Image 1 (cartoon, helix red, strand yellow):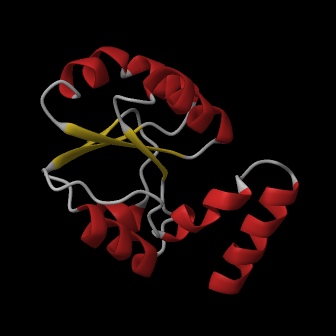
Image 2 (cartoon, one colour; image 1 turned 90 degrees about the vertical axis):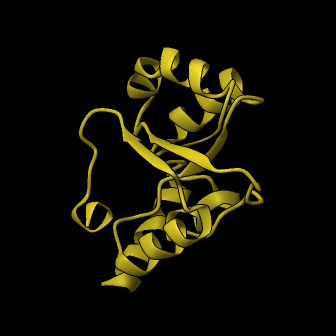
Length: 125
């Protein structure tokens, strides 16, 4: 199954649905250095969910390191454009046990907040 998932990622890169230099984030491999302070992880899959968390993000970033994960290129672009200095953005890892564990062990969030219901069973376990 994992080879098929990786093949799908490559196809999505060709279709501009994934960013070529950031695809490893989908496997739980970070592209940012880990902050020394505790962080709060907010998952907002798409731009709409991201926008609905605006007040929350703007409030939290004043006291905490905020990691926001998204699943779409447009949401990642929105993060870069509107929140560049307020958050750390990563693509959400795909719902594969190894990749979720890698992501969680690296970031070790103190609190996790999901916006709406883009929740996967392995991640929630």
